[in-house]
Amino acid sequence: MKDSLATVEVGGAAPYRIHIGPGLLDDGALLAKTLRGRHALLVSDSHVAPLYADRVDAALRAAQPELRIARHVVPAGEAEKTLANFGGVIEALAALGATRDACVYALGGGVTGDMAGFAAACWMRGIDVVQLPTTLLAMVDSSVGGKTAVDIPQGKNLVGAFHPPRAVLADTATLRTLPPRELRAGLAEVIKYGAIVDADFLRWLDAHCEALLAGDDAALAQAIARSCAHKAAITARDPFEHGERALLNFGHTFGHAIEAEQGYADGLNHGEAVAVGMLLAARLSATLGLASWGDAEALRALLLRFGLPVAVPAGLAPEALLARMWLDKKTQASGLRFILWNGPGAAQIVADVAEGAALAALRTET
Image 1 (cartoon, rainbow, N blue to C red):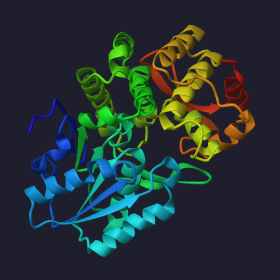
Image 2 (cartoon, one colour; image 1 turned 60 degrees about the vertical axis):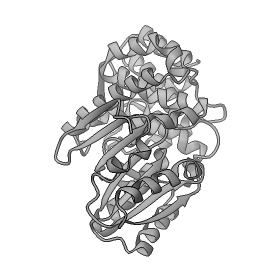
Image 3 (tube, rainbow, N blue to C red; image 1 turned 120 degrees about the vertical axis):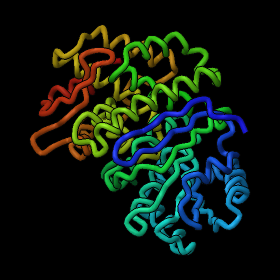
């Protein structure tokens, strides 16, 4: 077994380690390193389970022969991140007889990680979860930081809990089978880190665009490690999103509204919606005089280089998206709250944004 290409330490009250590199799903010793009990539930989806579940199961059994392992497979897709499917994970834990020292292994993308993590947070008021992300989006975003949730028709991630993982194993070899669209969607969240805290990273991404889109192992590993390091630092300082952590939601207020209005089924996926949302946030920043229109246009050009969408999908009314934003977790009773920027690498929280300004950003021609 090869050593990880990189590790990132996440500090705070519940510290853990992120391992990044190829072949990690076959490393039974590493998979089992944080196990405290004799029960493990492997949760995956109908796309990922046939590819990797047998390997993870075999590696765990080889490392811990006495381990009782069960497997629970949910349907694939954002539309399946529901209370009903969350209940299915809970029932699987009950059928396993999982005790308080059991562990949930979340194998898949962000939907699986969020739902399995939420189930781990709720079973017996909290058991361990190890995140095994298989998409770039999950590796750099949802698997790190301990946010877990499911969607309801009224909005995305409205039901959930903060529940940090015991470990994250990002096996970069899984990205070799990732569809190009999903790779690009993950790169949207990578671009976000440059936009909010690291302008030099934006320039690095621009210079390495072709290598990243081609799936170059070294370039992807560096992008993942740098993204995870930024998120780890922010979440360690603000684990429950009382302040700085909200900056990680740059583009998400608009993006989540787009996803919710689409019904989570057809149209833009999460990373694509965030790409559109980041450009809208940059344009809103320019409208409010916080940043230049040139900064917004430079971000638009970078998103286009990575093959990401930059326009609100046809058929989604600005007024309907605005109504969705009032249900967003970042909104407060006093008014709409957005994560905006003063230009690349300098994001800020802006409260009480006028509805008219948000509608103007939504109506700006691409």
